[in-house]
Structures are given as C-alpha cells and as structure tokens.
Picture 1 (tube, helix red, strand yellow):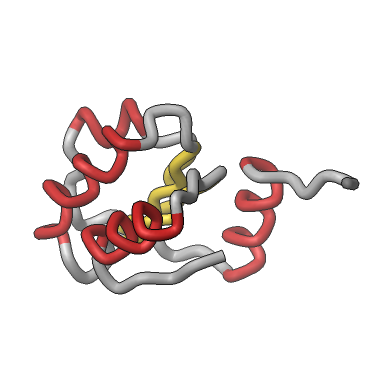
Picture 2: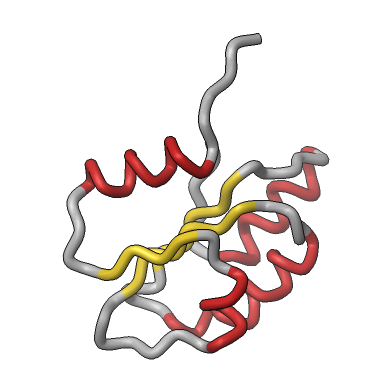
Length: 94
C-alpha cells in the first residue's frame, strides 16, 4: 500500500518502482482539480480497479463514473471503505 496526496505523486512513485497497482482509491472530497492528473494515472493502468470516495455535492465527470469500479458517496464509515477494498482487491494465499 502506498498513500499520496496527489495523483501525480502516485504516478511518479509507481513508475519509479515499476509497480502496477491492483486498486487505486481516490478521495475527491477536497480537490476536484486533480481530475486531469487522475485521468493520466488511470490511462497508465487501464486494468486497475478504481474506488472513488466522493462528496454528494460534487458532480463527477461521466468518464470517471464509467471508469470507477465503485463509488462511495459521503457520508460513509471507515468500515464501508475497508469492506469495498476487500471486495475489489481481495488478499490471496501465496
């Protein structure tokens, strides 16, 4: 797991380590200006699942609604996020 404040930071980190994420969780509550950066990040990882955490007061672009594996709109509990992450990126025995 890796957490980044901006989508561009996440893209730089992933490229630097040569990683391909199983799941991207994007919280759009405070900064809708990151949508262009998020779109570029998602273009690099077209098969990666996407969980969007959104405010019901912010309209999401149609491309993001179609691309998202799941959208959670506030209010939600941390347990809701944990449950959805588990569904979208289940751990496997190795």
